[in-house]
Length: 129
Image (cartoon, rainbow, N blue to C red):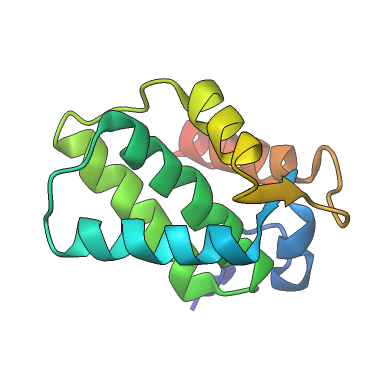
């Protein structure tokens, strides 16, 4: 099985996942994230802001926990929402609101530029096909 089939953020190693993003969930953020995720799974009506927050918090949650299956699930949600024409609306404001409500906090392990390694790999792979 190719590496990117087991590791959705290849070539970033799974042990480096916690370094990918500038924020992580707080205890209250984890509770809020699980409520958003539950509402999404149950098909409840959600605002664009809630969808944006779900996207943000899902990747923070999955990478902080070094969980490739959750990263695949986050990617699937992003694709599914785009297919439903529920595009990212105002991620900056959603992120600021999460910060202001102390639902996310600065990630002390964050390594600037690490996510770019994944993005560059994806772009090169897409151009290669």
